[in-house]
Length: 159
Ligand SMILES: [Cu+2]
Image (tube, rainbow, N blue to C red; front, side):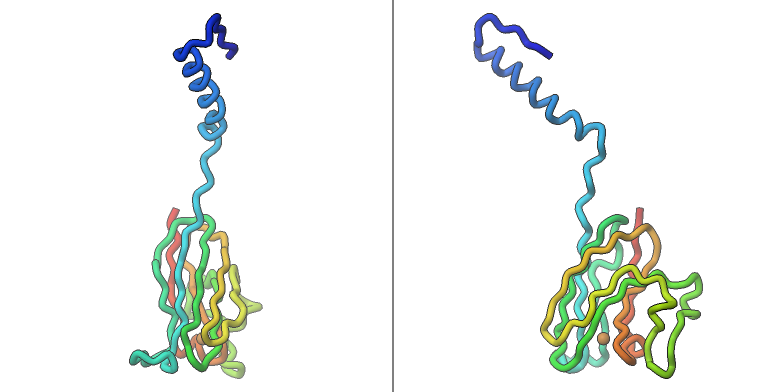
């Protein structure tokens, strides 16, 4: 690597610089660069939000992301209700999701839960990052009755 230059002419300095730059970049050629986290925006809304919204729901964009770190940017634009976002890996047959009719919600302890935003009060935001493998996931609000009222959306994670 040693570069001999009897006189430090411009060409020699340039050559030295190129060698150093190549050496500095070498590790990046051997190790794949970490992929930037995908971002999924999630809006929690319900009729109290206004704008003619008829049902409570999670508005998710995009619905398809690449595997790895996925950052969920959550905002509750309800005026009255607290919401949340769970990232669930449902059983092979989603119809068998464990549900408590008594508590009006999914039984979280019996589901593979990969992310939990906790509660967002009206107007609150929350950001969480979850590592996801390829597959289909269910984004859910599990406040009492909210799941059955329609607050669930599929998210597809690709390779
Ligand atoms: Cu909700």
